Image 1: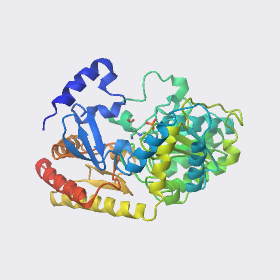
Image 2 (image 1 turned 90 degrees about the vertical axis):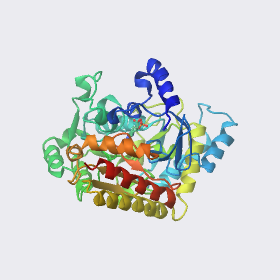
Image 3 (image 1 turned 180 degrees about the horizontal axis):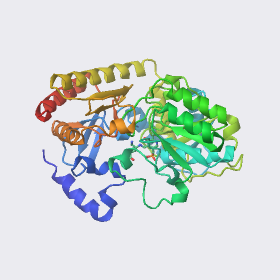
Image 4 (image 1 turned 120 degrees about the vertical axis):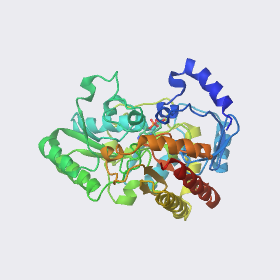
Length: 429
Ligand code: KE4
């Protein structure tokens, strides 16, 4: 497969952009290859600078649940951009977005738009600290909530992929107030909360983890977080940046029936444009400036292009049967991959919620970051390379989730399963 143009672009980029990329996980370091430079994408297909076509399961790390360049999203951006791109003043589109989000997710009585998932979680943490007057927060190993200093502790995603222990540049004093516990460890949560509950401003969690690979909450885990925070006057923050409108129209909180105090969103709600949001009960959100004293701001927050793209996206997702159809496609893919791995005698564990999933190259259940780390990364690398060779574009890390979109048809899913069967045969040695 000719990748000359990507290669030469990379060698230009690497001199003027750190690592040649604008976000670390894109560098493909953990799969030992240079990144492909993408020219364009349409539906479930992505095309690199050399014109090679791939079936895409990265979906820009989550936003592309409709597939790429969906006509409704593109038309919305075109129409709105001709009216101006940013005013730094409120617009009707922001009201419509807030109405849609608060209707879709009942725990959101008020919502504030920001420009990334990092901003959403960083603001949510500040809000929780402001409301409770407490400093200490709890997160979970392998969960990634963006790169705000206070959250870069035992983080997943790029930090896990690149094995960066926390990160230089984050003062110890900043993370002194951040406790990181094993995901799904109910006893650890109860123990810490019984001893230090009164100090805890909030617990922040990915209700379905996606940044250590896809890891589901075990029975009672989310319920325990809800009970323990209620008991000790702490707030529960669901980081639904990835799961929001992905695993269900109402997010993971609709799937698991748990009501958090604050929810963070991003990715899908911006239709592929820079976006984030955080929201919750009125009496909590009213602490946010200018209504309350907790400061948070953003020049481009709620900008018309991201609002228009996000609204166009949500209009498609709310159509009857959208998630049922996506579930059928996702199940077909994961069942097919499971069968192909079994037929080839490849040890693999599949975790999936709706259209987000991960195949771990381990034969044990994966319920935590330590479990995920038992995966055979060498085998993952070989699988990744083989699938790319076969025209399948996967997340370049064992510690990421893959995504199916409504644009993936039976043909492409069958092609993917066949490609995996071919690769499994080659790598099973
Ligand atoms: P952003 O700041 O990248 O928009 O969002 C941070 C974030 C927060 N919370 C969750 C649950 C997330 O998954 C993310 C970002 N996800 C990663 C991929 N796993 C983004 C990819 C990247 O860093 O380039």
